[in-house]
Length: 103
Image (cartoon, rainbow, N blue to C red):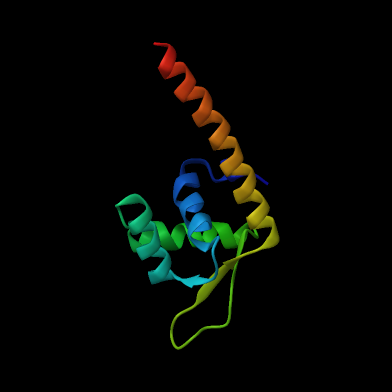
């Protein structure tokens, strides 16, 4: 399963997966991490919409709530999907940079 199945929602989903790549986080921590990564924190609707879609596709899973916060973690399929997408974008980026250098 690739992230392309998320259509126009693929970027928020990708950012959530990247955030969870170094371990479980709850929603607010994911939001803050994405903000540090991109300079722009996703709104709650965008964030929790992405989380819901990723859960439905089995790419992430909720863990037991801690206080009132629900942490999430990557599933093995989510880790594989993230790896594949990052490798795909690395290859695409390399081609784009080479083409820019030619012009």
